[in-house]
Image 1 (cartoon, rainbow, N blue to C red):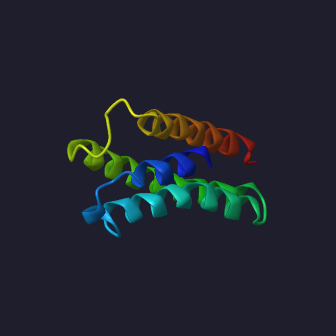
Image 2: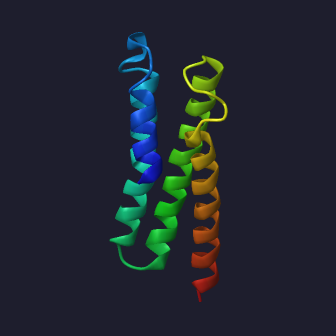
Length: 105
């Protein structure tokens, strides 16, 4: 959720010509990460959650690519907190995936 908030605030500073382009794609991808985790947690057990962790990881990879483009276009500083938060969330997802796989019979 923190990452989604950060991306929302960050993209609000983008130039107006990016409205409904890169900024909205980034917001959608950022929102998709916690949304997929919530949906997976609301399903039937760890196997379903594991599947949705994969979806969340895909959304995070999409966001990471978009964030890199935003850096290259100089809409975002390379040392932005959002860049670091993407890495942190990625590590958390890997840990969650590992823990869920180790729980499988």
